[in-house]
Length: 111
Image (spheres, rainbow, N blue to C red):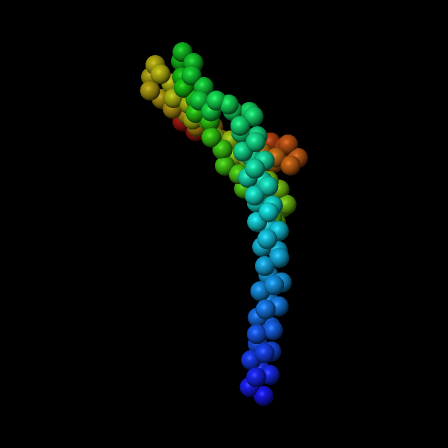
């Protein structure tokens, strides 16, 4: 009887682990694909990632996030600009959906 219960518990744990591992693997692959797409987009659009002009220097960066709930790959473009004449800086962040190439909005601070 004891062996039967132990085998039953082991079988239940195995099934739970196997069933829960598959969605995590799929989610991981979608997150990795989003990360690669964001890097490719950044490398293509912002090379070099520093723009020097006579008046300012702007440094570009990005973050990516895959939303499983929305099934979307988000790309956050970050641009920090430092004015050379008066030592002021500004930060502009724009959010995009890379899979549908939609821009959701822009946030600007420090102007």
